[in-house]
Image 1 (tube, helix red, strand yellow):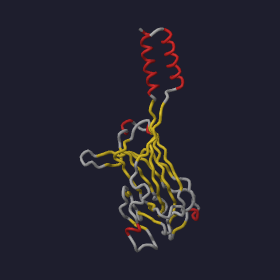
Image 2 (cartoon, one colour):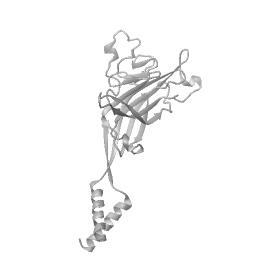
Image 3 (cartoon, helix red, strand yellow):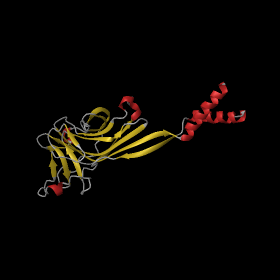
Image 4 (cartoon, one colour):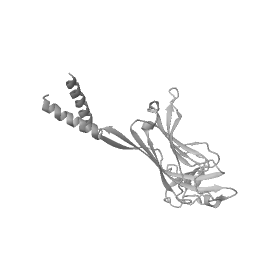
Length: 251
């Protein structure tokens, strides 16, 4: 390589270092089982509850119930607690102190990735001798409801997964209105954890508060996306060429 070529390459590499490496982002939707809680149809299962369409303490496809204190299940349109702005042909998950969990064995935590967990949530009030809105008790916060992203680890002997570490918890502090579904998003940067957490399975948790009596909450439309940042090949090539140029200069 002659001096002119070396000079041009040196300038190009210097510009790359000055501007920072060029990178590309890949966005991927991570499959969530039964994200809208519509798999177990209430009206198809029970035909005699049209006046009170709900299923309590039942199996919900794709989801496991943790810490169920009392009532946890599914609601459909026609129930008194069904969110007023939810589509009439859908269902929502309901709890007054439980947590819904879904482990995604095929989705492993990887570095250089931003995960976004988005959930529609409705706060349905409290029960102190009868159901009331929080505002009637002088309260405007959500008292501990949250959406969370966890890492789960597999037991090699049984193949079962158990929760390993909470990656991020987002408290639901803004109330969209009593009985109204509102959108909440948790954003997690995977570079904020230790390297030994990479490779663990992702886990979604929808947490109902256990504070101040029976806290009623509904969840719906769960989505999870992963945006991974990778260096462009041109940048990597220039950096490699720059390294060779520097070695040639030293010789």
